[in-house]
Image 1 (cartoon, rainbow, N blue to C red):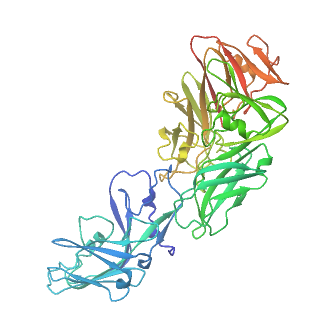
Image 2: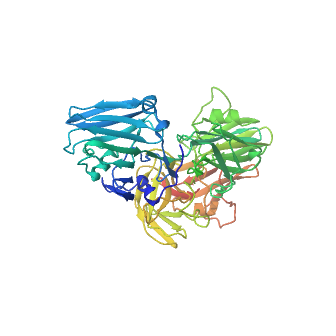
Image 3: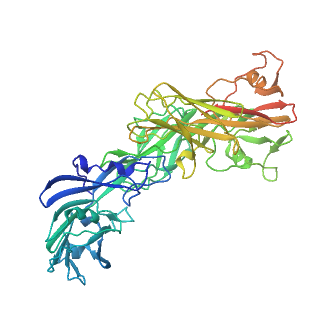
Length: 567
């Protein structure tokens, strides 16, 4: 395809508006002179076969309008109506050679030809009553990457015959079947052009895995054709990923969907995003989901721990125990508050869950690198949207079964914000993985929104804010924020914080957060230490950290509910 820069009327930007109000068409004319001119079809409403649609995306993928030559198709279908519909399909060799021909009962004789760029339909009718040349629609078939075909989008030229009605020429555009052209008897002609909105969709299902000192990234490819390569972006925190300077890319011209970060496992944390890139049009997709690694150092002896990231796939205690080098045994706590030991086949096993606490007994000092999904992600693309100073501003507070969101708006003018909510960390990158919670208005200052019923169907909630400009286009989102409710039953339970909290929490502050909490137990210097609620801060106290394991003692007839806000 050859990209053509057109006049202003050439822009068919309305094709990608996500907020359609209803079916409507408008026609813009360019450089009309007598019976000859060039007309462009602009869509303002109903979904058009060439408009980009992707239910997996939150809106407005990077796109460009490109001209499609007839020579890029395998065949062309022409639909004519004289009394009844007549459908004829011609292959490319016929169109660019002798031409396709057909006739009707009204003595209309058609010739269909192409120069490889546009399609020309010539009609001769000797009966001079003005009813000749009745074209309903035409479609390119077999264009790579466009399985539904491409209907005509512009009138490149036309010639009226005797009694022709010039305004009817527009009936040859689009995929409707209601009307047809009436360009006249004797010799009339219409030249049609085709265009397609090419958009770049992001890769999906990004994962990470450890290979010695390296991190291997793998993903599902973008479904867009013409992807030249993928760019990889990284950072040491989910919210500090550099979105402008990639840390690497795949080999240009290949279909590679993996990349290795040499030495990536030598740090405590690292997080990644991937974007698809089309060099022909200079288009880069939205970001993929975020995936990362988290390195935990284990000392000789017993080491409490919890999952710092959500695993890509379900994993059992037995699998985790086998993966941790130098491990003697792994411990998990049952619903009765008792530690259960796993030493090998035949011992009780359990699914490892984020938010629960575990313990491993180690022969000698070692490390283990967890791979998985963090609690904060972003849908970023170039241009309008949250910027460097505001994209990490989304925060939340919880209480009284509500979650209050607050963020700082970008410097650009925003018409309104879409508030999206998901039950899954990567739900904003999945079809039907999120819901529209509502909208908010506000300028570049602080903006607020309250979720009045966050935990009725799930104890995990993730929020994302998408700004919309005055033309209805979606911009780059904020980084998401997590609000995770944990329920602690009466008795003793092990736990780990499910997300990296944005505010510092201590054993003492957690003990004081609910009257039914007796105290919290934490591990230090090879021993469990109990911090009772009555103890002052700093005494048998510690900062509650991601990846660590704790025990909480509750005395109540009902579970104690505590929400953790973080990334």
